[in-house]
Image (cartoon, rainbow, N blue to C red; front, side, top):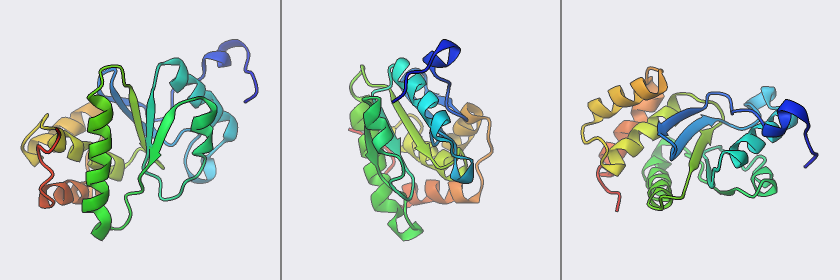
Length: 175
């Protein structure tokens, strides 16, 4: 990785960055931007910021394994769990939630979860995690809480993920 100078040496906060659990669990769009807006230099700057701010794990929900090698370059451990199709959600959400719970059980861990963009599916996963972890026990309360945390309304695709979490019996499953 090329050395950056001046104000860029500290990197830049990822686009859409938001704390879900203060100083422990954050979310953002994919480092470097999404789809055609993705820029390698921006990815580098955002990963420098994440490493410099003590992030220990990244959980990628991307459909493809794009740029996972970049996390290795800044020495941040990662997992890649694509959400997949709706019929795959129960198993994949169970995996996502279990990973987050295992990492966050260690007080020294600081985790970033991202999807292609900071949108409904990512917010739906985060809402489901509130239920899984037992932070909130009612899905309607979890939706309201996550909307306040993220400043975004949860749309249909996010609500489908919350419904899949409930239907799969994943509420309060964190160990």
